[in-house]
Length: 310
Image (cartoon, rainbow, N blue to C red):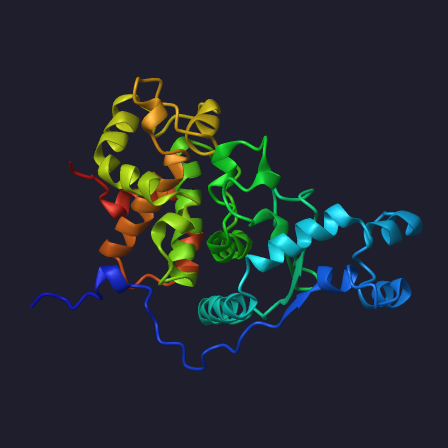
């Protein structure tokens, strides 16, 4: 008798017993730019928001027409009700796998484009989550002029949820600092991506990778060629530090040093690590997530029998 395996496609589709309520979202900037709220009251309510900005500058920023314009445009792009139920759903999925997880307080704000390179910030000691909405005004937004196109592709409102999920995923996976072979690096990234699968089972895969749909399609279509390249170039167990820049860090494309580079999808090492970890779960679907996260890369790789075919 063949053992009854879960459908690998729906491995992470779970039924949440008590579906999470919507996340409570507070828009700090709405109050910040509201002339009806005295500065003192605002500062007492959000004592951490001012940072090191002197009082006079802080007061001036509240009436800065350009800043207000950016905020109004950014907030108009976001369906806060929808985001609130998506985040509630995300939090219940995280809590399902990690019962110690407590829903954070969620704050939206506009950094006036100052913080758009790292728009999601989680303060773990106080359990506060901050989302910089000026980073999600949409690809090719005039405010992003001069910003590299490859960053802009994940600056759409539908990138908020997977980016929040990724920030929490990093809290549950310890990077292995002693062994830094390429396989260690990509399997570490693969573990983060498997958490994205678990936390966001119905989210499109391309968004979890910060890809466009065509970039994801390219990666899927070339999965076997990419793996053959890594194997034939002896990269899998290499500790060459340049591989991080070539295949893991954000960039316009991956660097195979061939004529197809410009057509390739970026960060292809992350994609490959993800497929190795997914293949591991196809082989061993009963593995508890917490146990899987503690396994070393070599073990995961060996037990995955990862050999993609053209």
